[in-house]
Length: 593
Image 1 (cartoon, helix red, strand yellow):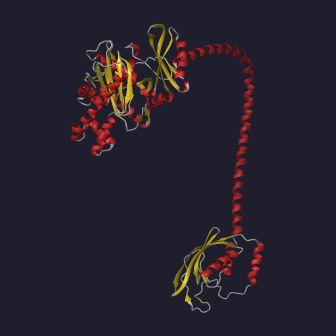
Image 2 (cartoon, helix red, strand yellow; image 1 turned 30 degrees about the vertical axis):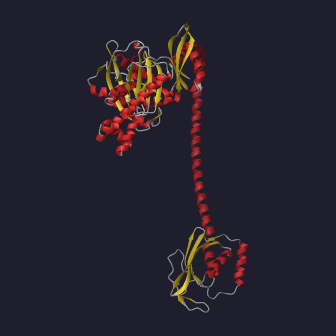
């Protein structure tokens, strides 16, 4: 478990990663309690780079963060980031008052393990002491905030990949509260105990929060945002999603957008805010709010505050946390004012750089792994161990130096002898390796020669067998060998002659596995013939089988029509002579019947 206690930082960049854009703000302290806007940048993200608050495309987000940091032109590399509110678990617990820090840490850890549905070792956790329990000064109320550690690590990895150092990991809702303090200071007519509703309308979500004395008393999320408007633009004008989003932000859409689509979306936004407000009234004891503050990118729509005020009958303003700040000469105030509502969370995160100034009583949470106390304990243990080790080491060194001096020379001589023997062994090993390689090469040559010697008579047997096995009425035009497979092409007076040839091949001790590839009728010299192609295998014959086959062939009557060279004509009983077609090019040609 990572436990953190209010780490203090200065000079931070507020880095807000929303579902649609990366936003970065840098503030500086001016005078007593004042701030100055030094720089800011907004870089749009591709669609679905962030899905439901989780980083889905780290590369795209890293590219946007790097581009925003370069555009700002700042040398500050320390940043404050935040997790979306749905990604954290918040719980208020009560503890005895007056506990020491180490006791409070142990108690919070024990209480948190009972309320968190994860292993405590997989959780990043922080807490904030809110104060005494009402009507019971002997107990204190503590806000415990926890999240899965990998969610923190995902955001830290994005920042570190572009050379930034994350020193604070806040929660978006608490960052918004920090910036809301600045917004509420600019609203006239608010008094102690005023109830203010904040509607943060982003790309995909409308987050509706109600604050009393800048403390949250109600929150609700609803699936509504600028994403719907972009889809309407793409559908109406036949654009891709990215082109529709770009046109919406750059103001390059057709006139029908401003006349029809934008007013319709604005009406829907005002209706959703009114519905959220009504839902707040029906689920709590409150029946009214003093102000509505609009935040998020959609709050920049011209006239949206008046539209929401008319729908809800509640005074409505657009959030501008920079209204009471001075602005750097490098910034255009008009551009900052237009983007201010979308920078509410980034501004709240940038304010974390001034935690030590004691501004406000807001919740300060840091979900980064807490190391300071653990490092302090480890350092103390190290110092004690180092002192003991130094004392023991001094005694050992003093007693062993003399013995080491005597043994050193002897050991050096032994080492020299070993190095000499090792060198000789290496030479022998190399010689053995060379001899082995030469032996393997000779064996390879021997095996190759033996293989050639063994197979040299195969072609003789093949030709002898073909002459002996080809029946009358068949002559061959080509013969090819590929390994042990023999391919022949030729002509036959009838299909039965081809069948007889295949049976003869099966009966041969040197040939086998005949396969007829093709047989078709063709005209040769005006006579009907059957051209055929077949394959068979050249096999190694059993000597006894060969002897029997040769005896059988010797006893058989001679075939007068068997030829070993292509005839000029083919004749058979009852048939007239026909010219032999030209033989095909082949590796061995002219064997014919």
